[in-house]
Image (tube, rainbow, N blue to C red; front, side):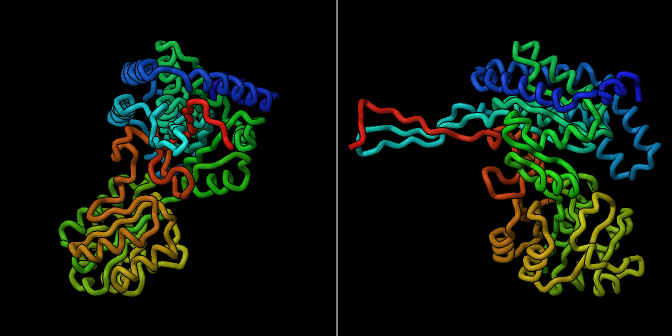
Length: 430
């Protein structure tokens, strides 16, 4: 750790520091709430430009983070989530540009009606205020969360994982540069300047009313802590115990393509498939090709008795496997009795994140899409499309798996609330 990091991490009065950050963010939120769309878009354009121009600095900072976790014995899946590449930085900048291009949600009238007494009532989108984002390992979240909050008129306090501290600082410098160029307060996007884990607890306390909502973006233990300790509302981003169900009506080539992509494209993302369910009625023709494909691609398969009989390399699945988010090249596999069996398994073991069906039978697909109670359900498509960028949001602040306010990818629109504007002509209530 460098001397500057030691100095920051050794701050003797962390509560005062965090309270001051929240106070500055609150003042910035008032400015952002009234900022014109054009000004926010200028900042977003400058941020995208700064990320591209400072790619070498970001990569150098990230290399230090990666070297540190490798020395600490981190898993390959964790290292993949942490690692930035030129292509991933380009994607980050492209995401900022996409966010800039989407309509500004603030001030949008979503509904309007007139009462019998002549009053007109409008429901209009407004920012939430100050958002606290607590995330682990993936440094691109700093950019995604920062620009989405900016677009939606919210100030944000970012607390990245200690493993990505240098990377997040380098990215944050680009965010700050964009705000400066557009004449917006730099406190609109604040990065907690310490690795001290006590900062998380202070954010969860709400910082004396300084934070309006918390968004956790990380593993099961982080989300559990946030939900247990938070004194402000939470957009829960739970683990992605995601399923791909291959119906007897599925085309084998399509099923193989979707299953391989859903599991192996990037094993460390929340949209990765963790369980394969195969229809018993079609298992004779689909199960063996799917299992062999996964094994030959380097994926460990843990299966029930039927799956184990297909290939000696399959390991026995335990009860725990059906509830596990591996975030690695491991998948649990089970044979089920049709779409009803798949739905029952998902209800019992899923995390309500993302689940997919591969089927040509429209009735089976319709039943799956209707009855699986997840934030995202797909028909004949990979679970790895569980991503705000793929939904056209430019980026996401997380995948909300709860049912209040926002669900699924949380983009700029989902980071707003609403108020009612009532227009009268002198009406009084009798």
